[in-house]
Length: 192
Image 1: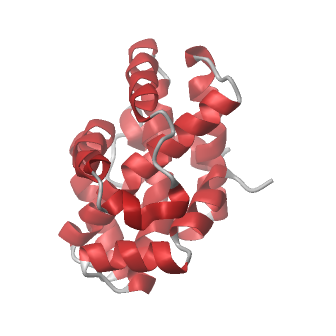
Image 2: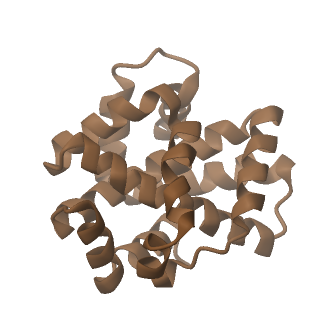
């Protein structure tokens, strides 16, 4: 069974979906695919980090409940034309906060896409990830208490299946404090 990261990448980076995302951000499809490959593990890692505290788990459970798994990954073109796509920036800021700009800049350096375009790609991806995770959590009947473990496993698999994301995590961690925040969480994952 493919990991969450692998299944999302295969759906988001397939022909029409990748073309729709690339067209909406005016980016090269190969660079957009690369940005997705690095960005999805960062989003999953941030979700896992958020879920690691009771308040964060509740906040994330609320986000997952709001999405209800209603955004279909097999119809990204339809999603891009919907009002759900407009909420991506807010979700992304809520998840990554002050770490968003350094992550955008790091992905930009790797892909050649401007940081603003990377931000648009990540803003498109965030609601798709949240919706897909919401669908999986509902389907597997994962409770709030098990959310951090569930997301931690998928974040670890995402980093392991994407050498670029693992390298980005290591590079990004070099500028972070030793503990706490997304940096501390990713450092723990990368050491496993």
